[in-house]
Length: 356
Image (tube, rainbow, N blue to C red; front, top):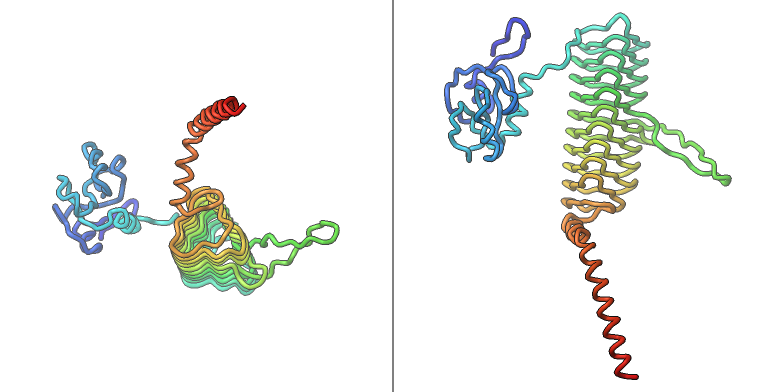
């Protein structure tokens, strides 16, 4: 692997990438790859990818130096790496070229560290960041400018806390956790009891949020602390921007929660679950492993493992699309119903005349 003198960006040969991916190469292994791009935007030196046969129509103007393609596409006239899943392969290759924003190791002069803060090796703390007393930050973690870490917080190694991220008192983050700007981890859960006069009495929220290894949390997402115990986001889960997770929720490993989805308190979500954009999940439910909930769906009942759900209220996909097909025919069916009513009225009048 080489690096350019100016940008320090890595350079790989196509042969090195083939060896790293463990895949077949067609073309010159010495071709130098300096980045990744789409078919439309790739420049000489970039590697791009083709997922489906219909995408090959875009190759006539493609300037990429090489492609990632599935075995079914054969020879497209480009140097290529033959991979089972080009979309997955391009994600892995792109990681080789990805570099987080520069933040020099050490503590900026304007950052505030309270008493008994412990910093691991090669930690970086940016301008105007704040770390509360008795908190610990693991090796190589980057805390960008304006981020806030409360008291008694534990943060693992190789984490990224982007500008304006907030980790409230007592919360726990594992290794390689990414928290984007504006996200708030550990705000109070929404817990109130109503008294005899209808006034809302706050229930103190004394639990924590636990974020396991390899979780990513999008910008302006919120994950509330537990009333008691913990709100728990398990290993490998990815949470998009503007997602709301209520108190005492558990989200299982390797799940995906997409933008503007919301999960109410004490719901248990299984592993490999997908909640699409703006899905809403009521409280105290159990969502089984591998469940997929469609966009804008509203879930008010627990869901067995492996189900695909859609609609408001959420129904199994097959039932939802049957109902949707009928809904599209409602104007026609309404017209037919009016005609049938008129015909029945004529028959009833005729029968009445015969019996008179």
